[in-house]
Length: 278
Image 1 (cartoon, one colour):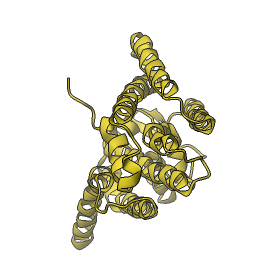
Image 2: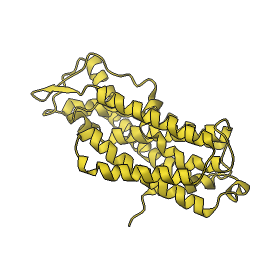
Image 3: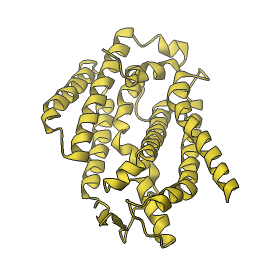
Image 4: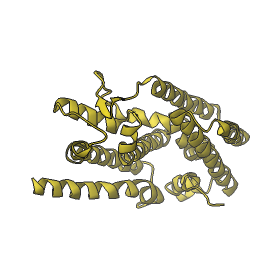
């Protein structure tokens, strides 16, 4: 069975530490944390599908099983009490995010014409979108707790911030890829919200059956915004690693940061090409 890339996060995080610190972590612990990471990943994907589409209800028992296995794995390793408090805090953030998503009204259309809501979320606090997936930082950070560090330790704080930045960038990048589908499905994301805000400011009428001006608006106005915000997030993520990493470049940079930087460069070239055509 193919192993999801998420499996390697704990080991990649371990490899940024000093050799002395790495020697404190048994291979058995890394394997258990890696498997727990997969259990959580699978559970979250199923829960997300159910929340987004109100479908796949039949997969709920499987998701609950994955989630239970994730919790059992972490409980069996007997981490310090403040680690389990962190788990509770991160899942509380996830629950609040899911409640907010369910409360947010969908984009309405009349005869394929988009009705732009009077109030649009600004997403000024963009890092909040990481609350949807920040629980994925639990298994990698567990390594530091296993070594005896507490939540007050600078490495844990920097590690948590790193994953918050990366997961925000990943969610933003995913939304940028799915923006047209999200718009057609009436989903409000940072991308579709920025698009509607720009259309409202320019007094543009958006018709999903005649989308030329929608695509032009996205290419000219939204693509540069996405590139700018992704660049800022990823530069900050690199900086957070400086204080905890003894290995540079490392697998976290190669596998989590660099893949998100490649589309930015393509988007910048595309924007320059558009500017040259005007």
